[in-house]
Image (cartoon, rainbow, N blue to C red; front, top):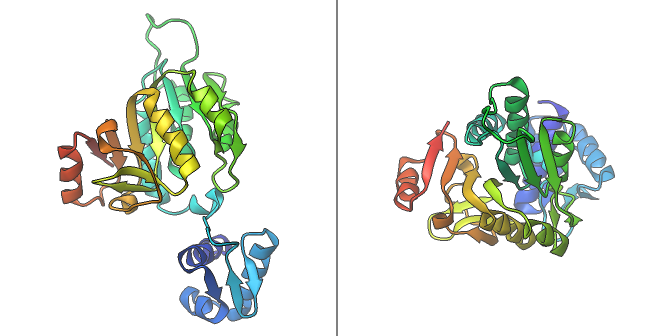
Length: 267
């Protein structure tokens, strides 16, 4: 197991229980206690946890894995989901992207698709960019800003360090003035009764506004989020047109989503 994989696992253990014990972590990861101590010391230097005698605890009550450490979870599934979602975007459209690991993969898939010539703009299309992307995610904006064929529009707002998302009244002000052909939303939970959800109310409110401003709503998430509830509701299933996920989704879940009017694509 590489250092990066160990760090992912340690942070996941911390997110689940709020604390990590050196000896227990060493047994779980099948490495020496000395290795775990070094890992915890280095994570503490990055202010990702607080060292204690015999282990570590999370910062405060609410703890969330930073985006860079969540990116390796379900990575193959997220890449397939992203490619399928990118194929739902037509040349010349205005697409919204919220923050998250899966939507970051969607941004990369869109950049590759429109740079490779796979998505040819029709001759009858008006002059302009091959694609316009509106996002509140700083990392997505940074990756797409260097793509000359893509017009990138970023919202204002206050940055959340865990997800690189901009939130708050400034974000609302920009999104309220745009019209989107399609929005691709990453979520933290999908519940048959409550709809799609996020861990934080400020992110949920921005994602909700994205959905309100779009003609089509596409949700991208791996199957581990199915049946999960998070703290804040984004919108109901009636607002979602398509959900793209992996093939591990349970058939009964597909049936319930389809019954609610959601088209489910599994990849």
